[in-house]
Every structure is written in C-alpha cells, then in structure tokens.
Amino acid sequence: MDLNGQAIGKRIRKRRKELGLTQLDIKAATGISSGNLSDIENGNRLPSASTLVHLSNILQCSVDWMLTGLSPHSENPCFSGIENTAARTLLQGFQQLSPRDQEELLEILSIKLRKSQLENTAKSSPLTNTAASDLVG
Picture (cartoon, rainbow, N blue to C red):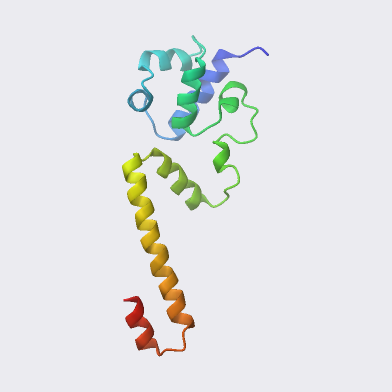
C-alpha cells in the first residue's frame, strides 16, 4: 500500500478545522510540535505511529481514515452507532474533559437520573399531586 502524504495531510487539516482546533491546540493536547504538524498537513512528512494515535484521539477520527480515507466512519468507532447529534456531542465533549471533570460530570448525571426516577415514581403513585410533588421537591 502506497501512502499519499498530501492526502493524509489534507484529511488531518480538514478534520482539525472541522473541530475548530488550531495547531497550537494540538500541540498543547498532544505534545506534537506545530512545525511537525505543519509538515504533516502540508504532505512533507508522514506521521509516526505514536503521532497517528495522538491525532486520532484529539481529532476524534480513526487512524485508518487518516491514512486511507476509506474507513466507513470518519470518527472514532465508539461514535459510529450513535445517530443522535446531542449524544454524539456529549460523548465527544466528555472525552475532552480532564479525569476530574469527567468524574464531576458523572456525579451530576447520577443526581439527574435519581431525580428523574423519583419524578417518574411520583407520577405513577396513587398519592395526590401535592403529596407526590413533595417527594420530588
């Protein structure tokens, strides 16, 4: 298989811009120098395996897609079955958070789910509306 450096660079640049990332953003997140990324995006250099993995994570796309453009999904496989745009956005955003922020977000989700469960229980309960709302509130 002959890898086309120009095509690889164009795909990487296009995806970076789709996500609104600068070369400096990539450098800050991955340690890949802007000069190295510029060389890759301009087709002057092929990315190393470790660079491909870093780019795959930050650009939320598969290594296969970056190299060949033939992957059935331009995003990471974990997003391939998700049709709901809001769910995709949440998952992509979650991956970009620090571990501490991810943990905090999961705690918020747990609180919201418990609240929703209480509300659903109150709606199906034979209690009066006032008594049910007292349980939730």
